[in-house]
View 1 (spheres, rainbow, N blue to C red):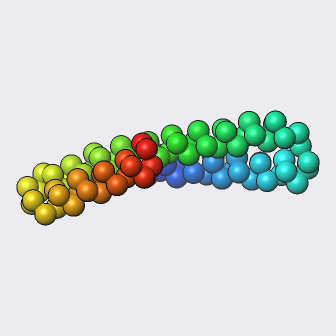
View 2 (cartoon, rainbow, N blue to C red):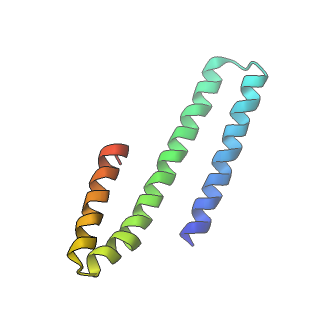
Length: 88
């Protein structure tokens, strides 16, 4: 379910990016282009949050449920890197 939801969001974002491309080709007013760019950035942030939620609910939960200290430590390291890198 979430995979299809994420793919649907991506298709919408792709459409928005194509729209920005057309706007630039048509020499549309810069402020209008900037508004659309901000919209795409917000949509990508939303997608990022959804992917992170899925990661936490499935991959992270499985790593910690395994009770394998090496898997847990690796997942903890990965989460910290993701938080620092992407400021989610």
